[in-house]
Length: 358
Ligand SMILES: [Ca+2]
Picture 1 (cartoon, protein in one colour):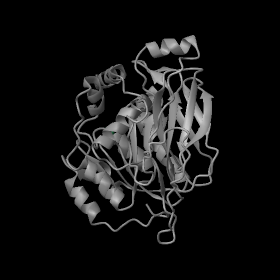
Picture 2: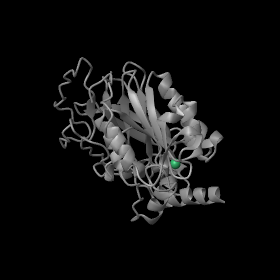
Picture 3: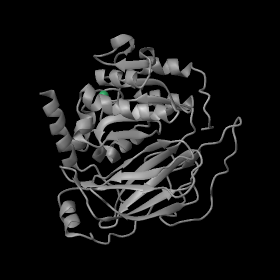
């Protein structure tokens, strides 16, 4: 029964229209080195930060937060596109990429509308990448089954790069982030619902009721920012579907969580609350990170499927902190009601030796 309620909420959430923004209303992660110069798409003026080495390692470039001005809506190219967009609000979602410098990297997103997250097919989308000098055009591409996977044609030094995707038909926009991290980078992993929020349905209620702000556990945001202050990359992995990407990013930003790559599901099966559903989905993504040479130092979660995924990705039970009814299961660290005590522990940790300067 609980599962039925869960998916009813997913469906209802889409009805609420997780907004695909129209440019500057998407403001998701920090803009500390890009300056937000108001240039907009196609702006190619200077201002690239100087990447001074720190302790012999490259400085991470922060190519995010630049103002983006979409081109005016041109009308859909296909009758099908027009009809899909009439079916409900745009809820496009970008996929964050985490990969080492020198490896192939793509800007990926899914384009959907309405309660059923219906795919926008055979419609042109303009794709842009903030390369720290301005919005670099990655071209205009036609969606296939509602998706785009656009190879990035510039060499990216270690850094965080923002991509924007504009559906030319109605000027709806979504975003993704490319985290180009050297091998050996240390990552702290966290689930969102029931771990940072107080239940597994907080986000869906938020979107359903629109004005409702999901309740975060006390010190949940501080948990992530404290890890970031220790130079950890905080990776967010959630069973939420991609059409909730914008709403999820906005919630994390609004409540002051540390910026970090966000990984969402792309199929209903991946979101099922079982080991073979969300458990294997999470395990596979985490294993893909270790396969790229990243180090998963520790993880936060609330569900048995989290423990299953974290164990499967090689994270020791003693390096897992589980909050709520499954706290302490399998020898994990038990947390109840608040992250405050754990934040104090993290504050006492030494700074993580990363192969980059954050
Ligand atoms: Ca959860």
